Image (cartoon, rainbow, N blue to C red):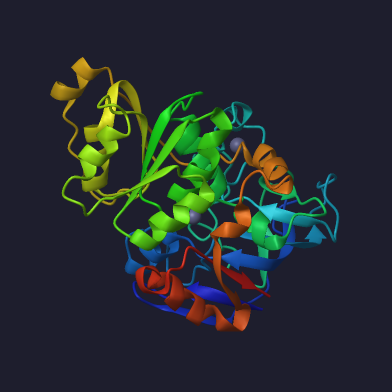
Length: 351
Ligand SMILES: [Zn+2]
Ligand SMILES: [Zn+2]
């Protein structure tokens, strides 16, 4: 089969590799019909994730059709259309039992690490993928939900919702600011309304992304390159600060921006993946009663989000800005890597 293979920092090829095979009775093999590229894949290609070794097939998002099932798999059948979750879950370890799939203790990849696809085991940017713990890690796709909609449920929609909106404890009437209107920030924007946020402020450097964020439910937008960006946010909150500030970039500056605009007693939910240390001024924050949360997605809300996508209550299609076929994989990466220029959000790549 063909797959997108990591060759060390800066190197990738769409090339021939052996087909995956069932290795454990709880595995299935999925023919990947649709996949996409994540910002994390670009981090890996820069060499920022040393756990990813040469020869690894990248990708942790995908939708496909089951072609083969392991001996102990009873609830899935060959021919089933499924969403491949970016997080493995064995379903029976202590962390899986509490919904903390991000720290599944199953041995696959590494015990305690939920994100294994395209990281510690071969991923979804391939014609076929082996899915471990298939009965827990796959979600059956109902009729009426397209591949393009479903692939947004592998990672970005649950990530924005769980780590931004749920961890940020958004509640009815809240003013929520989302710093960073990339795919995951937009996923938080598009799901903040589920908990009744009254005002959703998108903050970004890119005017085009801000305009786009209105399509996802942003009620107000603030260009963060404006010298008075903070005053603009404060004006929208009667000078009080926002109830919830969601960080969806992953650099110290944007984390500090969240701290700067959150009201006393408010919540800062960090979704961004940070590559370097952030200074945390506990000496100032304690007296403000600020809550700070962060984490890796569990994907335990995928079934719920799937229902809302099926009912068109979450605008999953709006994330898809570019379309490619598997033989245009390198072009898809190029378009996604130059997102500021190409205005790419999610590139949808189909077999
Ligand atoms: Zn991802
Ligand atoms: Zn587990």
